[in-house]
Image 1 (cartoon, rainbow, N blue to C red):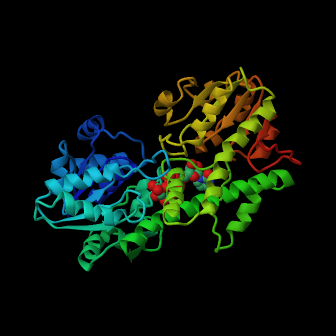
Image 2 (image 1 turned 180 degrees about the horizontal axis):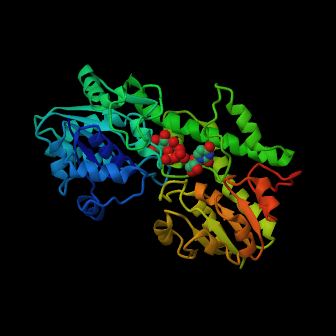
Image 3 (image 1 turned 90 degrees about the vertical axis):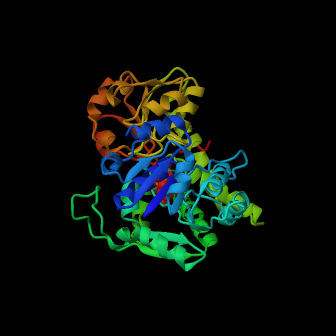
Length: 458
Ligand code: UGA
């Protein structure tokens, strides 16, 4: 099928490239001229595991192209996927102006019937507004438009895997033709018939994805409800970590045993510095605002947000308690990305932590395997080390803020010896506390007290 993708961020690029990998002819467009030029030159503006290989191959084989002009993309696809950003406004609501622009573009430039698919995370009723906007902006043309919602559940760092091996594909539709068209687009995924770039073949056996067909409003709500529930699980684990420290229990032991109950499940119960990234913080906030607009005070989610915001203050307090005075201390910071396997630092707890430490007068020497370039602009007061060992040299403390697996494999004895004080504060519970302490390092983590805890509440 001929498909257009508008917006080449993480979602748009993974979606467009994977749709090409499924055999469709895909034309993408991004309104940022620098990004657009990079993509037309065959360079990816983001790091995402496995994306580069299929990006290059599908470009070479002619299934994946990038348009220089917006009008081209509005005319090309039988289906047009909208993958533009919906960043938070001051009041926490989602800014839908990019979607409005795209609606105007499609309505005025399209010359044949289009299925317009919202892929961006949007509040409920955006589908209705989109339909209305297409009709208003396109009132002088006789092109017909159908609208669908098809939320993405991709995680950064495993976007390609999540696209090709999803648990479910959710489509919100208003007619059978739209359902059929979306089913046709995703048929190779539903049948497991594609060349998997992630696994050595064959892929590990997984259940076939469920194709869930709903109304547009339900589909839009499923996305917000899923992200907010996952955020809730994380905040629950973080609140438990607090309690564990106060009571001398170990949060990992507690959440592991909880997760063995299939009604609870083991995922998203990792305590740490809290959730970040461009999805959870803004989606929880947008869901709270959306509920308020609908006349409901979603206090449960307000608490999810409050617990998450407290995590950084609490961890800074932990650093302060360990160091007594933060000003002028040299602190090594391992990890800047909001989670491992990505270069994304948007709403990153690691960056927030660095900002707090810099504001208190610490000298921060940071290292991240992928996110350094992006972090340089965000943290002008920090020094950036070429590797973790250089970051740790002469430091008064070392903080782990992102759980990159390679940090676990460092020579921690060597790191300890090179530090002014071998103090490790592990904000992601990455290291084995016994093993680290046995090397003679001081070690603190989240919700895993060494003995009786005397946690301070900020
Ligand atoms: C999230 C969802 O997982 C995706 O399903 C969704 O499609 C995406 O948002 C989106 O709306 O676009 P993502 O933001 O890429 O994906 O990352 P996650 O892996 O969900 O992690 C989010 C944050 O939660 C990270 O900061 C991570 O460190 C934190 N986290 C995650 C925890 O603190 N504890 C956990 O147990 C799990």
